[in-house]
Length: 151
Length: 123
Image (tube, rainbow over the protein chains, first blue to last red):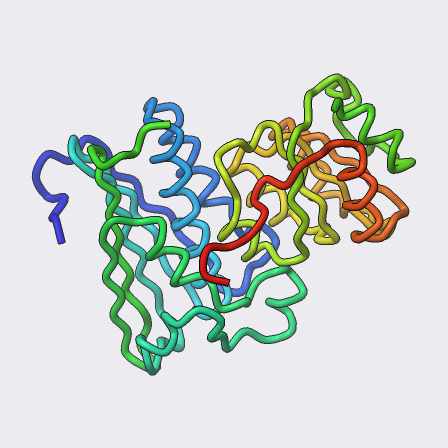
């Protein structure tokens, strides 16, 4: 995966509080606002915001706390989400559409359909997910700025 | 159709966005799962009406990603105050109709509203 260390134009880190559903989605809204103000094409903004929203929800639903970092470089956008949570025992299983361990609280909010991780994959160009059960989860994704992202 | 026509067809009450009733609406998307909104939302957001029973602020955050034109809550469900405030901040009009989701969709379709997405690729 491309490393953002070189040529970072912008970097911001947001703290995510696990279990705080009241403003779930607020951080991805801020990410969207930053990208919009930076003047990126609509499709890039949409894909990044959708993936960020899903990632943010995952931290809120399954972790004690975490953070989401947005990196903007000349060639790609990168988002890194790290959390301290229950982790994912079987990453391959979790990636499967429809697989979910969500409880009733999460489902009442309209989430927990088991579509989140596959939706992140669908909306990004590269995605890496690693997790250690009981330790937490590390997710990174990249959206390239040159790939049919007009519109 | 305009949002005003949506309001009339569905005997709806405008909760916020009174000033936006002339806004044009061409497409509809109905879901009680925000996961579905996030997975199936499309780019033509500004012309799209979201039909839902989800009344929490998350519905505004999710709609905001697609710049959706308006939201109508079905089954007479009224959004909580935090949702209304967020909708006002994000300039997303909110309506509430007593009709259930099926009837809401049926009436709108009959009057010419079309789906923002009609089917999934691998269903």
